[in-house]
Amino acid sequence: MLLEYDGTAYCGFQRQDGLPTIQSELERAVAVITKAPAKAIGAGRTDAGVHARGQVVSFRTGARMPAEKFVPALNSVLPADIRVMRAEEAPWEFHARYDARGKTYEYTIDTRPVPSVFLRNYAHHIPAGLDIGAMRKGCAHLVGRHDFRSFAASHGGAKTFAREVRRCEAEADGGLVRITVEADGFLYNMVRIMVGTLILVGVGKLSPDDVARVRDARARRLAGPTAPARGLCLVRVDYGGAAGDAGRGAAAGGCGHEFC
Image 1 (cartoon, rainbow, N blue to C red):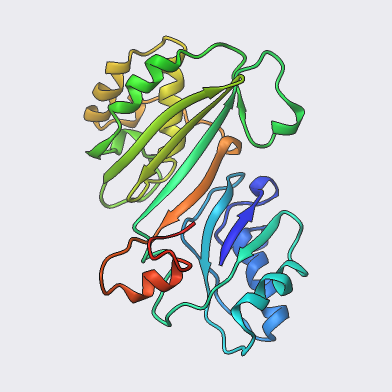
Image 2 (image 1 turned 180 degrees about the vertical axis):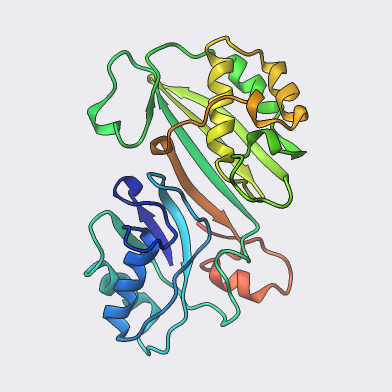
């Protein structure tokens, strides 16, 4: 399934006892529709307050309902801030998380003196001009395969820190700044720490070349603060298009490359 959700009211994607989460709401909805429990597996375990417009979720069911019928059925029992946009049958072995080849996140910053009330849950407000040229130069130091230990939360629990960032871009439009990061995988809070570091570049507290020095130091204390969750959105999950990869191709929704 392809999902959109507003993460404001939730304690992240992953189920937590006694707390509202995206996974628990999905599993409740699936149980209502199919009359049987099922585990919903997300491509990304978004944190509390993080949003998605391209989350992919898989679950197994013995229900004989056609896949496309799950869209209106689940949306009829899900809360209004979670929506199933598309549903397709995938091979039995498909796994939304482990089969993913990459993800793309966007982070939105509102730099206008007075922030829009309609973006208060979807953008981080910084009432100051940001040097987009400098931020773009800083972004360039984050592209490639590196040890991103400096940009990982100290309590993340990762065993390896090497990731390949395929794209890191900063764009400005009408007082909004959007930072887009695409990678083969992400460490805990990696995008938000990268954004916090690039903001320091944008306000002149770090130079673009300092980003490379922070990266190579492999020390979290040298990077910027963790940007607030509300500005972050999972926009795309890539499942690749390798020959013979029938599971990923089928789950990709007909395009053979990504569930987009």
